[in-house]
Image 1 (cartoon, helix red, strand yellow):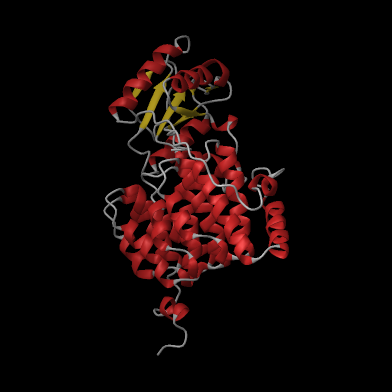
Image 2 (cartoon, helix red, strand yellow):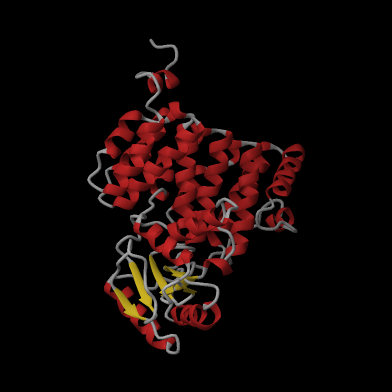
Length: 383
């Protein structure tokens, strides 16, 4: 999911994008889905800048993949093959627990697929995209993948702050973290701690009552900035309320406030709130991806932050277990001694092949460590 909407990844070639993929995207959008053509989408917040990372981030956020196998390349034997990126994306989806059983292939009649993939497919008539849309609709329904629209917030009237929040957020843009931090610092120089706490509380009340997504993100960026200047200003009970909201933008606001808190004061971050949001199999990507990142950050500082991953490793959904293994591999790239070896070993023996393979990479990455390296990292002095 993305922003509370069901996501369908459309794998297509640029040659047939305008004539085939875009009409299908429009049809799926009309049905209530968020259909994604990656080349026309912005880079997701927090995703790396490489094209490969952009594709993977959208795939991780998707609920199904539809491959539009059009005739793009003529081979030496005069047979037609689809673009390599489509084959690559099919293979990626097969290696992604959340997508491996939700891949639909629509193939033009003259296309020959490589011998290493032999999927069940539906015929793709390039002149009848309406028929393709109907086939996709039926298949998505069979998978119980239904459109989900963002819920409407309940109207609320926040109390007026001592310093208008609008004055503090005026001119701030999305992602304008440095300017927000500068304003929070000026506020800290000129205001008492009590006044700053009141402003932070009022800003969170405005976020809770807001209807506009942009207003939510910009106001929450001010709260994040205030937390960077003084972590004690963040009222965690209000963050907990946002974290349990039915509205995705408010859960996004909660986890990004916690991310900044994790950087400034990892000991103050409530693991329960992070754990509610770190649910790869069921939570919106914009929520679960930063929540998983916050967990990794906390594991560099707090030994017991691992309980979040321990809990996910017991999930019945392979997506959760696979994402824990992938997170441990990321953690190993930063500090191998922060990886719990018992958890890596447990996942390497998982019944799911993809989970076991990813966790085996983790086990290999930490194999050179002494047996007590993990214990000594957090308890260097013993008792």
